[in-house]
Length: 102
Figure 1 (cartoon, helix red, strand yellow):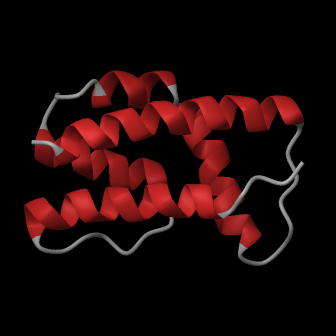
Figure 2 (tube, rainbow, N blue to C red):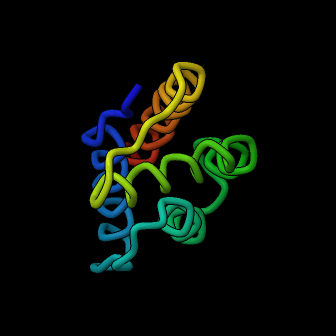
Figure 3 (cartoon, rainbow, N blue to C red):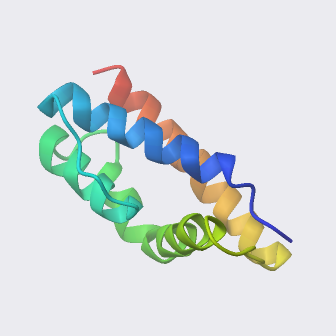
């Protein structure tokens, strides 16, 4: 099963937007965890972001790999991987919405 490339792309864009709002710029990187660390650094421990990063680190690494790999090669994941990633992205969306409301 292929992970939809648009979903991780949207998370990257949302994360970059949050950083841009605080800094006026954002890091040029493909590493979602680095971007989210910057968001945590700028916004502080609000909206359960720190907890999300600790609990979902492995899934975020999978999404980074899928995002980077899919630019050059097809990325295939098992159904279980997709379901875990989907759940984590839903949780990330809740965190990002909360941060946007600040």
